[in-house]
Length: 293
Length: 290
Image (cartoon, rainbow over all chains, first blue to last red; front, side, top):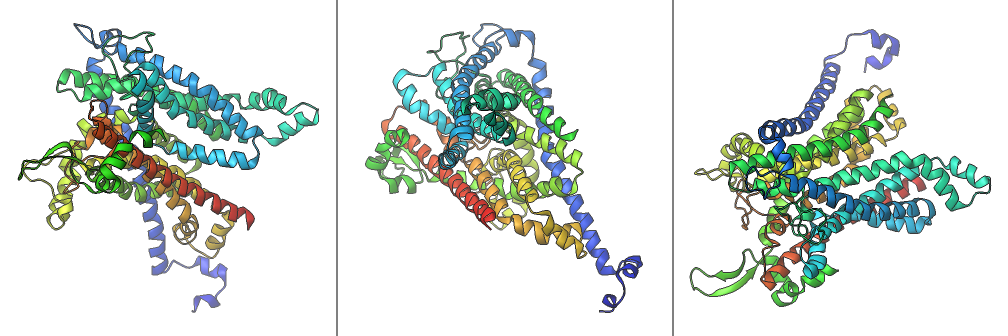
């Protein structure tokens, strides 16, 4: 080739050949296509938010928020809101403490073999569909004691448990080893180091994991379908009785052959979406800001 | 374990093979020709619906997701990339019942009148699998379910692919770019081949997610226990069958069949993620070892 004989400097000053132009064009094309794909991907998020708000806002009234579905006039979603606010925190208590302890054990105390085996199991658990959690609780607890809010909480806890473990392990891995070593070198025992140094440093991160598990549990429908099952009556504190939850309310109302109930499903979807996205934006947004700055 | 025990009758009394090969689901099946009543509990319609919808979802989500990941990891400025990543993570956070509601009333009719109509009137004329019922094209179909799944698994494909692309060593890229390759040529010839296995693993995990997704699919697939003659016909997945029927079933053998479906689902998803994790572990070991 003639070009190889010339110096690189001279080569750079020449106009690009036709073949080079085609290569540059391909490069530009793929950038545009990739940008298009990205815009296409985030379109559903915008579409979902816009339509949920547009369809649900007209019926999102005060009485919707303060009256139960069983109320004789102007039924609302209070039973579902109150149900979610009971079952999800209970599930969080069940899965949160156990998950944190398991995560701390795996990250700080377990030998690499044990930790490897268990984190493998946790990974596999994360891939198990949430309806299986519902099925499991259905064929154990519900088969014996009937459907109840408590069974719903247990099913949610089964879904949330591996999430808490996973984020706990990941957050604790981010704590620099030098901190642990500094503490150990001062003669502090291992568990004391974990409690007073590692956990203090990782506190915000651990809270993030727990909050995300909460948001996840708040939005889950499948585990509740045949465990808590839903109830039109306002249920406060009767954990052995069926109880509604926001996702369950949306699902059940969306299948009713009545425009009124369907529009209520949209209104409940606004409340659900707002709560879940708010938690996610607050929790994740902080870490994004930290990375941007 | 418990699920296997509870579904025992379906495996022993009805038989594994009949369960996995029968194409009708009716505990009191009356043969239209002979009038004989029999028990027909077959998982074939649900397995077909599950596989079809998940494959459709993957066919859309995999190429688009990989392109988005390339954009985020390679082309976009850092700040934009972080913001877009954040937005895409939010899509994953939307409760599936909300996506289902939107799918049911907004997206399904939209898909029927655009994509479905277009595909059915072109490819559908030749291949029956893509033909639509011309009398009453249904918005609720395996195809719609696949599209909803594509939206839902996209964030997962993107997140994993982005991580894998990022982990391709800088020295490999520099070697190629230094020889005069354009950015895209480097991605195509160096980055993607190096990241291939990781991307494949991510796609398999996303497939597992698609197979197990319940509520959103239940709301748009039409819930008819048939082996769909075309992707534009209603169907049923394993998860949607359990979601719609469990709870109002008293028949012992049918209940065992539903829980049996759960066992099949559990087995498939656990196997998928176990295979991917084991492979990933092997890979990272050979990296650090070499």
